[in-house]
Image (cartoon, rainbow, N blue to C red):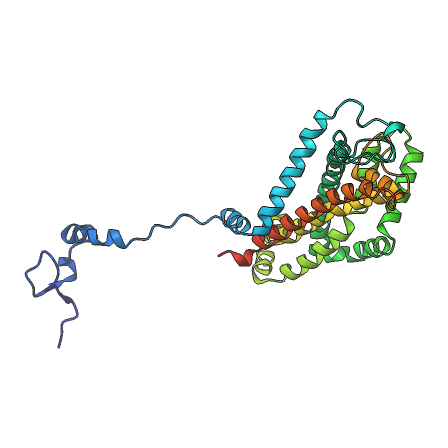
Length: 334
């Protein structure tokens, strides 16, 4: 019968064969010294860089051709809107009855509008104004809508309040709400800046739709195992919302944000149509499109060029938004 207290050491360095007890076996450090480091394993080791979620996001994002096109278009538009207005010749954006409905020529590249203002420099000035208003308004709507949506989805006791608010606002046309707010603010605060009045009008209820969307997504994610485990272990609600829920909602939030900006510009166009936008002395895409619409059949260039600028902005944000939505999806990353 084999003695289980002894071990075969025929192939162990430092022994001449035979058997040895457990106490006679070399320690781990001594065994490593006896065997020596196997240099041949160095070539078989695979060097892997630490995984980064955001690096993976950027990699997926910039592989999307639509993202590249959208970024190029948007960068060119933004740079042009910042730089070109500074080179506007004197008097080109002033009211001039001698240039009314002037067609494109060597001096006025895109012609002039109903007020005699140069369309080329007017469009770039209008893009800067409209983009500034839209980005600020969309940013406010995104922040407020995301926070409200997370709270709405996490604390189910607030359903009655939020559902009532959502049903009330969603059953009224958005443009009508903006018009009423603009009228009330103009009458109540006559010295308020036009830009401030527009931002308040566009953000007072603009976040409600996003909050309902975020709430629905929150309810889906909240019932996953790791969130149930976190809740059972007593993890604070703020940490669950910021660490477990928000990263999975980034794709939804970014996509909605990309759609908000052109939508807000369109709303500004609607307010300008009813005389509730910026004053005539301030140029925006909304005022230019509204002026061009009045004489579209006779002077179509006054409507086409501002509308084309708005279309390019919408296209750029759509391409970037959907590319970001795709790249931020956790299912595309390990």
